[in-house]
Image (cartoon, rainbow, N blue to C red):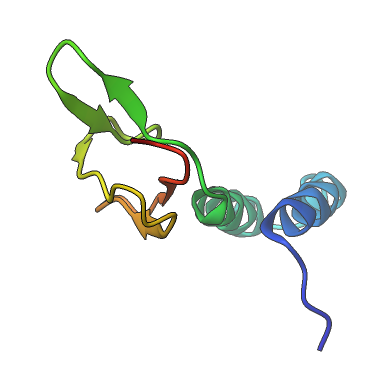
Length: 89
C-alpha cells in the first residue's frame, strides 16, 4: 500500500472531483468535499496567538486551545484540527 501525505491526497481528490462532478450523483461530490475537509485538518497548523486575552486559538474553528510549551508535540483541537506547537513559547 502506497502512503500519501494529506496534501497529495487532497490534490488527487480534487482532480477526481472535477472528473465526476458532471457524470455522477451529487453524493459523490459531497463525499469528496467531506474527505478534503477531513484531510485538511490532518495538516498541522500553528495556533493563533491572542496576546490581548492571553491564550491561543485554533486556526480552524477559533476555539481556545492549550499550550504545550517546549514539547514540540502535535496536538488536536476539539474540532479535529491538528496543531503544531513547535517553536511556540
